[in-house]
Length: 321
Image 1 (cartoon, rainbow, N blue to C red):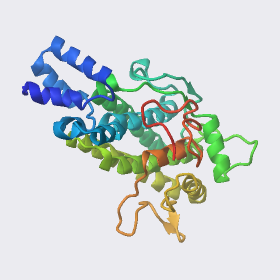
Image 2 (image 1 turned 180 degrees about the vertical axis):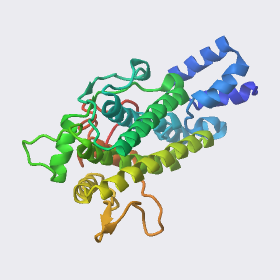
Image 3 (image 1 turned 45 degrees about the vertical axis):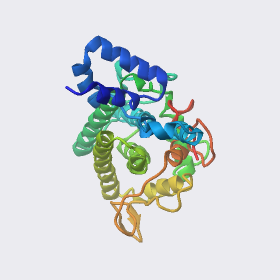
């Protein structure tokens, strides 16, 4: 299928540490070069290409830069943590249960999901939207796990109960001491979905320039597009249901957490609908991984856990800004 040097190069780019590379090499020996040639293209996420530049690797500066570089696998694993969160949120809303155990194992500390139950949707259309999004998020988890192979992180501990209450308090939707049950009704569910969807779009936009492998950059772009469709759907439905004020309050709360300027936009601006949050060139905003973690950890501080991820996310990218 592919030359041995090419396959070896992909293996070198496919994991976050030497142990992962050894496991890939072992698989190559067992499965045969032709099979692994295809498998690595479809089931391995690339690391920084700095290791492929041998002359520069001989210098101390180059080695330090390579060590500090964010690998493609690290970026995809960061995205996988977010997809776990979204998939668990939507799966519970639609099916009354989370992901199957077969899609939650991997590297790092695996954790339980706190909260989650089926939503009694009052609208047939919104229920179908939720079902479609739930399937998309399930597929994203499955795809990223396949792309990462043995380098994939496990699902970390996820809180989709107390975290939504904390987010609702921060946004001023409820008072301290009250509870926000995101699964209690259709409106609460939509507001909960709004907390995630815009963040997902900005996360993939911000991560795109960090991905060096074009194959995985293309995949990330494909996921970004789907997340953008999701976000636009949720924003549109919220606007039509008269929930703009609540959504705008959530947007303002996100904006106060991410250290990224005032670039989070509600679903209304100046009293008019604002379905597509974009800059003056009509380009989508992006967030760094650290800024994204500020939002899902529900804090503007530099921490390694909190909010929706009470024990933090798995992988090397795990600290907020």
